[in-house]
Length: 125
Image (cartoon, rainbow, N blue to C red; front, side, top):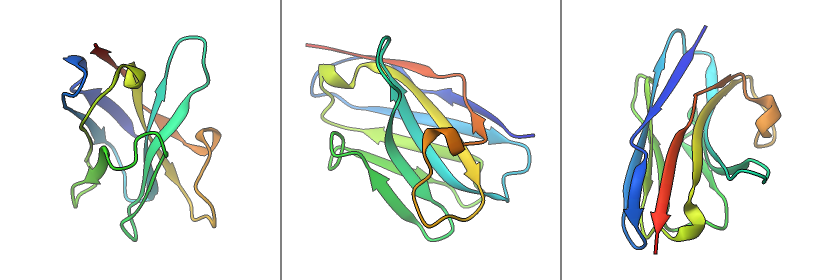
């Protein structure tokens, strides 16, 4: 079993930066897709950044491209999301997630096997 625990959320003014971390414990060797998702109450969960760790390939939602950077350490026990130039529209609960298996497509949120509990990010104007 894999456990994911996010940290680093908080409150920041628009234009500021935050760095989210996701500590993974358990056997992570078979997990290849690592993602950051966010959700605003009343709205669908949105995938903002995904890392295919085997090849170092990344995906970013258009809304965060150029501002957010996903990264992971070599042992796959720490996933990070560097968020710069934050705006009020980035306010949400942020979750990290991990999925195993190989695919020809970026996995949807329903294909992720493990999820963290979420961390709140609030951006004020």
